[in-house]
Length: 606
Image 1 (tube, rainbow, N blue to C red):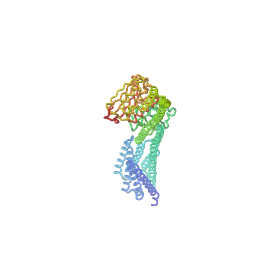
Image 2 (image 1 turned 120 degrees about the vertical axis):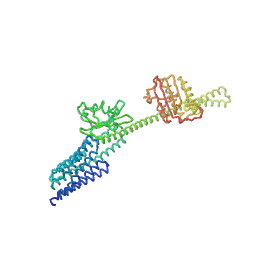
Image 3 (image 1 turned 180 degrees about the vertical axis):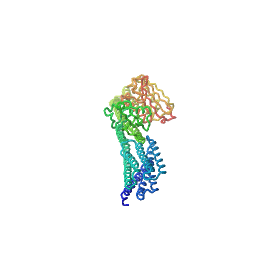
Image 4 (image 1 turned 90 degrees about the vertical axis):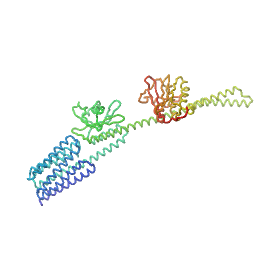
């Protein structure tokens, strides 16, 4: 037994290494719940038991039951590893063929071993070792194909360990059945399984790093304020995660698809990057035709045909409400891309699409806030202008009239005190002066808010306004109303009146119109106001406000300047409605305002 001390110790250490790897695989299964880990765990357990039986073989010789169990455990372990590797990704190219060949060899070896199990170098032992070796080599190849030929140390280490186990098993049947040879074979097997365990551990660490990268990408998507900044970071982080060293992103613009971000560059692009990325591309053709799958695809890029090289890239669409895009990650030569990796990149692409929509909405919100701020400033300026106009008119008209009236009254008092009677001419002059003052004040009141709007409603107020303020300035107005005997909500009536007022004064001041038509009516559950003129028109489109809408201002007879289309839009939005300004094909401008009719109050006469 003293001569067996070192080999037995080596085998015991090997059994401990196998047990440690089994525990590592159990922990990995608890973490991932992946079926292939179960098969690898069973295979490693079978190898551990086989190594333990080697101690019995060293101690008591190749007894029949132990020898039979030793070889059957070898075949079972090989079958478990082959099953786990093939099950890693059954759809990987060639994995089905690898599995069929490996299982066929194991079945043949099992049948032969059952029949022939005698002799130190028996055919059964040789066939069992060679079949197991083939199964381990095929398991390594299957795992490598399932993971892809990535620049990943863990994948290479696991692949090399499985192949080394196969080579060791191929040599094992031809070794002399001595304690030393058995110890060396078991030691090599222990080193190989330790390398396999190290690869598993390293793979777990890299997966943890990938999760951290995904987390950082998610944080970047929520943190980034600009689309270009977000795309640049996501492209680089995703490329590093899947071992792609270059890529770019196309986004749809008004002029077509443009480069929004780049990361590294393949060799053929280094000389002239912008020109190389400009123009048509097969991935863009697939995207435009709707033939690029949502989960992405591997595309052979035709941009490099002139350089005489073949470049393949993973292309993932980036659907967005603001325009579609595509994310391309170039695959190094010989690099395979698994469906799992493509799914991960596709999931990142979906998050990028949502983030782009969010960024677009934030940009629109910022633009709206800027417009609202500018509008508030114009409103404040208009209010101050209105106050200045009222102060000026009160001073120039009502103030002077009242001052004149007071002077006339003081003169009449002095005449009366001196005994001079007040004449009828003096009283008539005082009456005319008072009437002029009252008229001036009444005009100011009507400019601020016509009493007819509160007393009689929208239609009479529009009729009064178009006749006294617009038609009197030489612009005929045709008023068409189909509201019936009803009053609207006072806030809605005020909004409609002010929008009509601004539209009419723009027709008077800016459109050089000769005729205006104002129409108010119901359409289903909407209240519609339409103001059309035959003037010069605006730079408008049917899709929305005119390009020069910000400069379209409203004015009133007193010279005050309103806030134009911006004020009309804001006023309508506050009431749940919309305003659209379009240029008519035959010339002129149409202002169309629509409001929900819920604010109407039925049963009141106009």
